[in-house]
Length: 218
Image 1 (cartoon, rainbow, N blue to C red):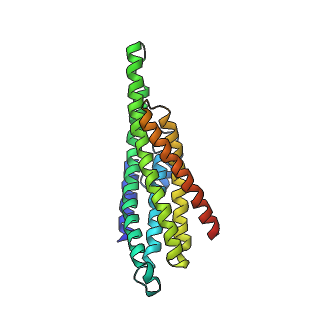
Image 2: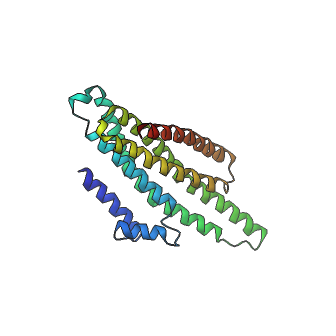
Image 3: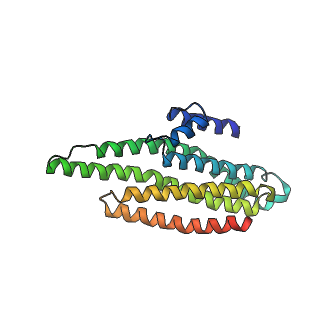
């Protein structure tokens, strides 16, 4: 069942970006087109990370040796399922909000009124564009916590998968932080910007912990 679900979201992403295969998608990502971009790549990386951690859970759930962690592993598996379904949706949404921002930049600016309207449109579009990596960043932070727990309490033979999932989530989270930073500079909403920056800084601290955990397993 897990493989069929994974195939379904991969196929959906490929269709969204006009690609027939993963190789096509990677080629599109490498091309000089606006989408898919870093947000789409981060979404897919997060989904893959969630799938790896979920797999590691599956090899421990139901086994007597890990009975003391059964409830925790099941909860982690269920949450990873939710995240790997949501992350590709955010990958798709990232392209939509980026296009809206690109269109805002194309608005005319011949008069003071047009310039004011353009600035407001850019700010609104940038806020929508920032909301996507902010949500994905929160999911990546969860994955890092989940993967760390699974690596510690699950099957040690699957540490490469649970800790590897943490690594993928960490990479996606770094992309999210970069995208958040580029968008908040365009937003004329001090409260939103302050909140976004706090969440980004929290992510930075979690990344440091994730790096230490992965190095520990290495």
